[in-house]
Length: 146
Image (cartoon, rainbow, N blue to C red; front, side):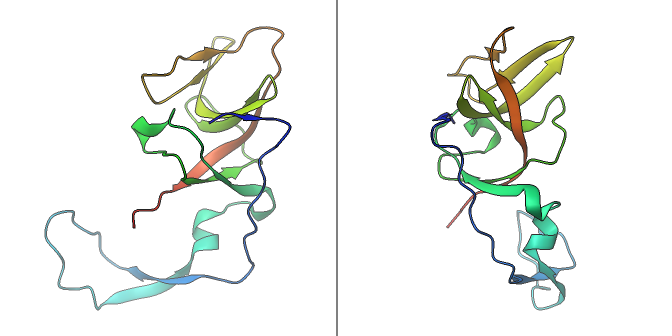
């Protein structure tokens, strides 16, 4: 995903209203259905479950296909937390030379690379003198199935 810095990512408003969902007390097999579906345990708030730092978390839509091999597709909504320190291996929203991109961060031996998760795209090595910043760490991918 690349976007010109002229149009920085726009946050999506997340209402303060709680969105309560039923939580089941068992793991769901991917094979045969469980007869215990009527026995839910409690309710959860998705804001509490998905967002660590409300003031620094943004929802951004994905454009492009450079991360499809790990299940991030065009149109998915990513939760990006700006308060987290980016570590080697994190999926990040980075700004390289005034363009935004979502990639896997590689930080080893003083070398910084942005690695796509699609073999059709090349790895980007951040060169000395280039403008580079990690805008935030991707914490969740909200991928619509239906």
